[in-house]
Length: 112
Image (cartoon, rainbow, N blue to C red; front, top):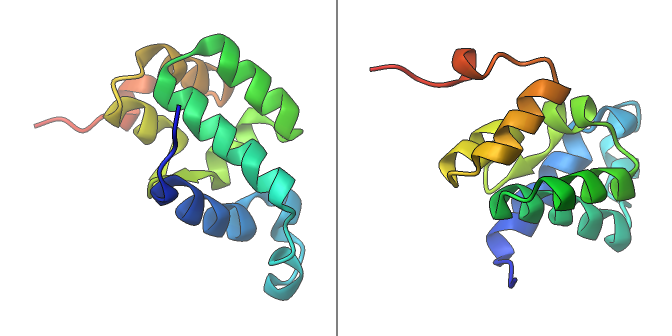
């Protein structure tokens, strides 16, 4: 699957600023995130979009960052993990994200 550049740029910015493992670093130090780590985080977004539970588990495990930390800081196309899943009709991965981060799925959806 080819991923547009729209995923990697917001993802890198959010990962640099928000992932709690890097939150203790100054912004100058966080700017040195490796390309390998960025690719691992992009893989998480790809797995969410593909609605692949197995790929999501593998990508999260490969990144070395927990679901909760990712949920607090990872941004895919300008959206948090759960919102990104819902916008892409990725119900299976959305359910996993909600379960692993102790979010109530209903509390995150807007009602009209």
